[in-house]
Image (cartoon, rainbow, N blue to C red; front, side):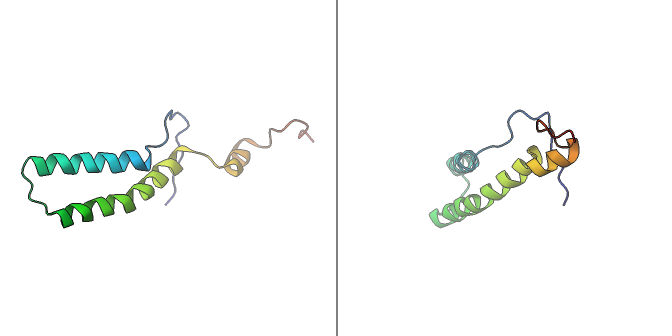
Length: 84
């Protein structure tokens, strides 16, 4: 999978904690409104979020940043004295 970074992005990542907090809040809301989940099922959903959150952050982050080697390859060596 080729990911093209977005140079216009201002905030590249949502933290793993943010994603986990959002899933936890969503889980609390849906159970409060009547979705019948046992505590074991809730723990399983939170466990899944704990595994998927870092993967999502890594994928999103990779699309938003450039590696130094990529920048050098795209724009050339810009260090002072590297003219020759």
